[in-house]
Length: 145
Image (cartoon, rainbow, N blue to C red; front, side, top):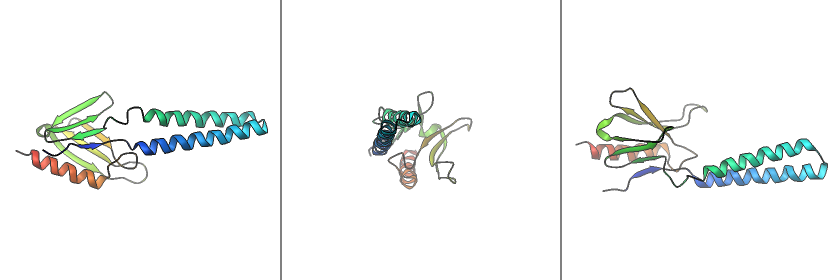
């Protein structure tokens, strides 16, 4: 039995963005202190808040966003975890990036077509769309009995 295929957050990106935000905040704090400009303290606060938000993204980075194995898939939705057996799925596909607005995603559609679930791919995750296509095709075909 192969290991489950998992999509996880790219923690190094969150750390890099948090450090960058804190560095910019420190720069603005230095300028605000040196020049005595109250408006620069506002920018300092904004970048500190952005850095904290990125650090909060690390809080649950050990939990996968999507898992596919021999039985089916599990993914995190807005309401919590959703699990579907391979036999309960109508379709599962990887949607590529569309322009600059829509990031790549794994889209799972229920057998009756009334519900669909998505999980992100791309820069913020550890899996590329091409790798996701290969891994999902391998597991879906293995589960077709």
